[in-house]
Length: 166
Length: 116
Image 1: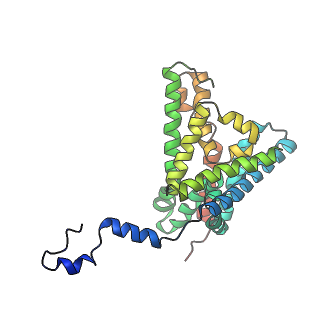
Image 2: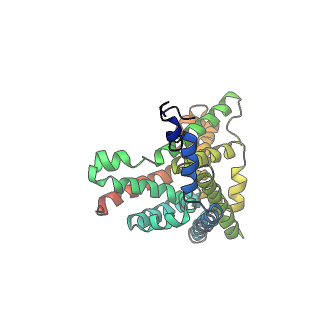
Image 3: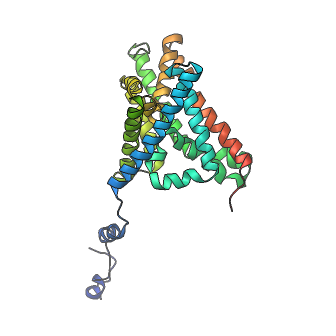
């Protein structure tokens, strides 16, 4: 029931007045339909491909530099990040992510992409107030929640005397 | 074989992210934060290491591995140095990723010409 209609011409106005729920229903009808399954397939293909590339880099590092899998994983991530930042600077990564959705956002390359694009967007505000201050605008929440979660896990280990062993 | 599993497991992590985007209508920042916490919890209960052994980069490249390595650093130093290690060790393993991202993003901002 709308409360805004005046009592005098209530009958005429009733047809035009919209309650909040009516509006939500109408807005929902005209929303572009998201093709969840199609988007998931795209995300799977692109995300899987990025991880496959990572595995290739890791394998190359392991065979040609004699690293163990554990030693090779940090340089692998760093190389993927560099690649992602180069692609972001050239404007290619954003085109990929328009098609791939979460497929390019969830891998660590998406983390680097969010930092690099925030930095590039705020170039105009200067190096300190723009680039420096805005680089973590999107990536900051990831770091904050990751660190807080890790701290809680560590504290659980301290309190229950698990001693940090898995 | 590990190449196939890297593709499949890495792809599945991205599908989870896409479902959070499309079905639960979460913003990218909410999705990433949730995935990092999921990674941290998975490591806390000891599921992430076997997954890395099984799928290689399929588990170490998605953002969940960031949560995993934060917990890993904290627990490793906790074991070595006692309770203070929880604070000092958190960024131990993730340093490479975060430093590389900061340094090269900054260099990009210096070198790339602003658009428009």
